[in-house]
Length: 323
Image: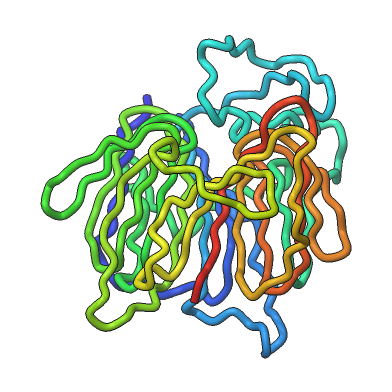
C-alpha cells in the first residue's frame, strides 16, 4: 500500500550543486528510487557555470509505472497496458514515451542519450536508478529534502495533482499544467494523495536589494500568447519578466512542420523537457530525433534549432536563465 507522499522545504543546510544534473524518481510499493541522469560537463573557464547558475531538473513520479500505448509517433509498437483514451492526461507521453525502456529491453546497450561538453540529450531508456541525496524516505511517504534557503524553486505538474502549502497555511491545489514559483527563504510543503509527476527547477537566486520576488501560482492556459516577431510558434511565459526574477520558464508550441526561424546562439543556458509531440533538435553540429519525455540541456552559446514533425502539436517547457 502506498504511503501518502509528503514534500517539504524548511532547512537551509544542504549546499549547492556545482554543476547541473537531471534526476528522475519513481515510487512503487517496494521502494523509492531516483534516476540520476548525468552531471553536466564543466565548461572552459570563460564559459564555466558558477554555483549561482546551478540547475536541477527533477522528474518525480509517485506511483506504479505505466507502460506506453503507441499511436502515430516514431514507430508502431504494440500496447503493453491497455490505457483507454479517457484516462490519458494532457502530457501522458512524458511518462509513457513511444520508445519506452520496456520497448527497448531486447536491444542491449542501446540508448538515444548523448552527453557532450556543451549539451546533453537525456532519454528514458538510459535512466540510472539510484537512491540520491535529493529524496528521503521517512517511512510515512516521500520527502523532498530541503534546498538551501537562497534557492528559488519552480514546480510544474505533468501528471496528477499536488497540494502546495506555504508557512502561513495557505494551500493551493496544483493540477496538470499548473505551476508554482517559490522565492528563496519561503518554507513550503507539497503533498500528494495519489499519483503525480512533477518537473522541478531549482536555482541559486541572484537577489537585488529591496527588489524581492513573490510566490506565484498559475496555469499555462491563464497566460496570454505573446508576440514572436519573425516566428510562427506560440509562446507563453510563466514567470514575470521584471528585473527581480533571474530566470524564466517558457511554454512553446509548434504545429507539425513548423520550426524555429532563428538559429539561436546566445549566452543563456537552457533546460528543456519535451511535453508533447516529436521533432528534430539541432544542438551544436548534431541533429537529434526527439519525442515527448526527452530532456535537453544546452550550455551558453551552443547553436540550437528545432523543427516539429509527426501528426500532432509539439510543446516543450524551457528554462532560461537571465542573469
